[in-house]
Image (cartoon, rainbow, N blue to C red; front, side, top):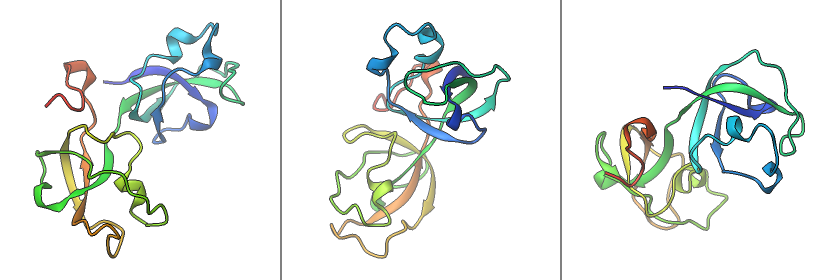
Length: 157
């Protein structure tokens, strides 16, 4: 189910994704707080619709904000290959210092936290790297988005 919120004008395009980081100190006193700060922090969202609402001034977003419809989005991640199948719950393997690796964004994905458990919805397969510098046997998966409306959150399964 979509939620209507305000996002920066640059993000207001159907299909764009972002991780909501929570309230900024610049939000204090803003008249649009109720409409803007209505998402779950540290969750990845996908814009599913853009409302024809015009642009509102914002202290955080330099070109202002506009109304959009968003839904929680899946997160792609590398996990231990041995337990990676659709429907299973897994955790991330842990931090990786190799930021130049083509898989780094999947080993430390935005929108997922270390120590939390996530349900795998899909297993695309091989990660983008040829070998893991930490000697991990990884596979690329897609974590199902959280289902806030039904009370299920990451880590609750």
